[in-house]
Length: 547
Image (cartoon, rainbow, N blue to C red; front, side, top):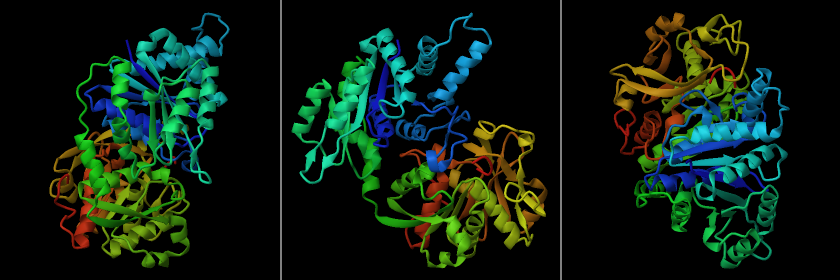
């Protein structure tokens, strides 16, 4: 019988429900349990792939090519697992499936309704994804009372009835504001969200109260009284220096023991020592490294959240704090000279899609190449690195990607052959894991310490192999190739302290205690340039277009 922990949110969004869910997973994983996590998104999109980064933030990519809500990234990083596309359930998927079944006659002439047909589809998907795991976390996105959320809450209510109380546990996450004038915690918003849940037949078994500061006993007593939850099942996730500290905070309050006891889980003694060491390293760096982050969506930092976290993971391994300097490529496009006034130790050119701001990104690449600043380009950043090299080193005037200029005289980056004729956007890019062969004797080989790696992809455009001989003759090194088909995966420059770019997205496989080599290498090279101990080459610990 599957055991489910269903996490719901209060009347405010963006209070850390995803981090709380991931933290619960980390606590259970520390007890040797096989933990899974599902994100439910009530929007009508089939997946997150076509959503604007300014509205939705980053699109996380799973190993099997799912384009997913960024909370899946939190789950993977905290649980150190690889999740699949079925771990994200959207209203769009549910309704599409129900309508397709109706069109095929699978309902045998029944009147198709929200209950039971839509709720049965939701339950089936949750139980299918939960099969084979000790515990499955189900985070229901949105806020309680949203009409889009109602079929999922009803399905959750039915799952409690069908699986039994011993196999289901409801955790409610809600904000408890601190009134600055009186320094008093106000529990009324949480009381109202619990009351709203009760209207749908759900009584929380536990509450995680989010707050700016640790709650006092009076607030906990009031929550217990009005939420009808024992004080021993009320936990407090207050603001901390890093989200990675949240599992430690909740564990200290006894949440792990409560969950295992309540669900009768056979669990080992918890071991969070590696996690504690990682958090200590984050909190106590020996040096700071300034990293320029050049992109077109920098106003919403969640657009690049996996890259930010990957840099933090690498920084913790090196006891270095990455200080991120956000560089808006639109502004650089207007005033390229501004780069001379920006002091950074390393430069990352970020993923993106479309023409806006790309000349500014190319200028950031030129600035890093000419001034010998350690450089990492990711996906679109790699493609633009090839464009910059073609123009300014090889001398191909007007060189570009056909995504940005279909009439370029030198299409050094073009649409991948398998993308020709694709007329739908959602789920049709080159997505998910691909094996990459790494060329011996290269910087990439020294970083990975292996002849191959598996990395995740999300792009349509790739380096045009017709231009490769000229590029290589001018000094561009191809140090990584797709193993299943001849495609450029990694490029680098030899006459540079650290210049590397990848077609794949290394950030999606970064973990707190397992930083990806290119990020560790970038920070290590920056430290070496600053006169530190680590060097980039040798140490081993060392929207619908570009990527």
